[in-house]
Image (tube, rainbow, N blue to C red; front, side):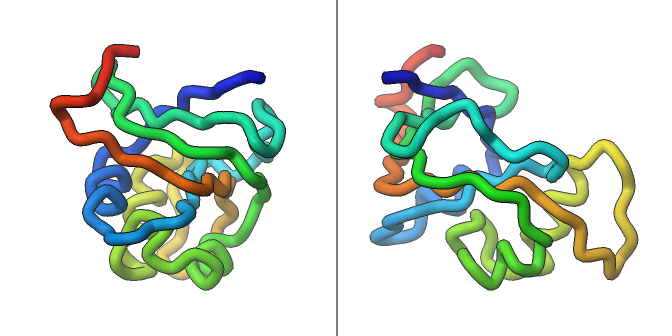
Amino acid sequence: MKLYVGVTDNDWYRFLSQLPNVDEVNFWKPGGKVRFQALTPGEFFLFKLKGDTRIAGGGVFTHASLLPVSLAWEAFKEKNGASTFESMRTQIASLRSAPVGSHEDFQIGCVLIQQPIFLPEKMQCQA
């Protein structure tokens, strides 16, 4: 069995760690050019905080796809790590290497993680 350590956007992590009863999350990949293939369903995906060396949580990898950002919002809503479509879109657009138009429905990578856990800071471990 393999595991993967994904560098997470800190705002994504903070938002989701505060939601009650989260059964799945969309770990998005802002570039949207290559579908995630590092794991097979059932393997573990860990969350590493961006700019830090701590593992802050994880879950079970289920599925990966490439979707327009609007469809990702429709499929996962707040489980994308933002309270609104506009805040999610702005967050992802700021992390892309190429600028996007204000109304562009750009493609993102979507990595579905089930049974996510978000560790309190005192329980986070060094990667």
